[in-house]
Image (cartoon, rainbow, N blue to C red):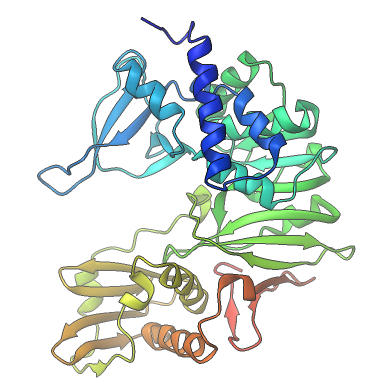
Length: 400
């Protein structure tokens, strides 16, 4: 039987197969990144991970099955070289892979991102030889290894807020011969000891663009971030930093989501019934139903991010067939209930949450449903951060 320490030609063949798959599906067209995929042994960076079972448990929770070489070598190796995200941690707690347990539910807090997305991030950031790079969110270390293989370890700095995660990644990186600068640090503040950088790439999401990252980027340098918020709307932006410290850049096409930087995670909002109790009895017809921002479509995914910019402190949850919006900052709330003639909405508080969402949807439709690439993020000298579009106005990044 092949063991993790003597995979030999099996792992080499699997890496080549993965690289060919990524080339075939158009994930990357740069042969230098594909060569990195062929060289970096991903299995060394995922000694254990969780895969979702086919069915949920009796409470409707996802059943997460641990996968290691000792439990099922074939399944472990096949998954390690698949183009899939592998969950490596839940609820900020490092698993004991010597005796892992089946999990029911839980919030993933670290993972080894699917290789196609890793390559897409490095390519979209326009990273090339000679660039000094800061990676925010080391995670498993696989993405870091690909950057080291392509650029050389001396030009790569990677930080993670979780010391346990970083220790595991460091062991794998150093064991494979890669020696990037690694540090336990909060991604919101970058890493001053190695600044300034030509490129900053984040493998986690932010509510707004941290000003520190702009200060740590050379003029003309680029920052690739995923923006998110408490409605779980996502968009990627590629910013170019100017001489005066301002930055601007387009949203990138496609649907991508990353775990949020931990300090930007949504707060607990309590019992939806308590919030609904303060709403008026009389409802009005809703101009648009919640499916406009919740449907499983690229347009709804994009529109959810735009709506989030209009109600940056709102959260959404569904109880039965009622959709609740809650704003823990202003104390505002709204609920949408389906009826025979469509959705009805009740709102209370200083911010009419669903009314603001409706205004965004109306402007979006009137503008011809513009895609992400027609929007730009502008970060001014005073650190005001806005989403700019010729026909859809008044959108501010959450948390800015």
